Length: 169
Image (cartoon, rainbow, N blue to C red; front, side, top):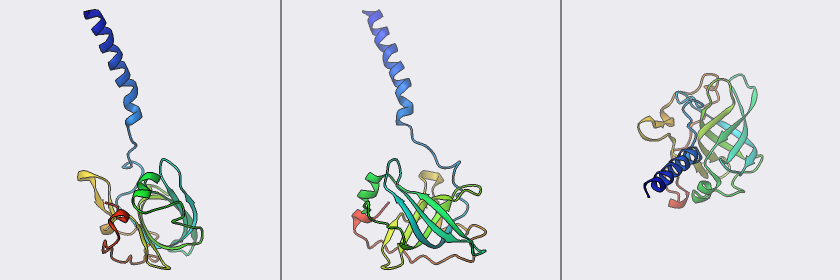
């Protein structure tokens, strides 16, 4: 009986060792520059509604007037639905005010995004609080990334009057 228990214990331990990477999630600290933000006008070019994260691509202008295409990673489609987003929330050509934390280096990608539609003032995205726990950052207090200071726009204050189902925490 003891041998049978030992075999079962070893098998269970092996299963746990193999399955633990499956439940792991990736971190963002090494990818994104949580010391700066970009807040500017943008035009949506592409909206990708797929797992593991919804992605939105848009064009912006930098301080030199050069047009650039940036992308941002948001939440999963399931979490997006829970926050009032749909497959049709963004369309190519939509004019936005956008604020996000850029990737490190010269990569034109970001996260922790807030969107305000210019046409109707509708707001999507988080409150600007990025990360979890002690490492969480209030993006709204970060300085603007050099090269994007002349194009900075003022985001309207988020009064959180949206229905609870559309508010991201």
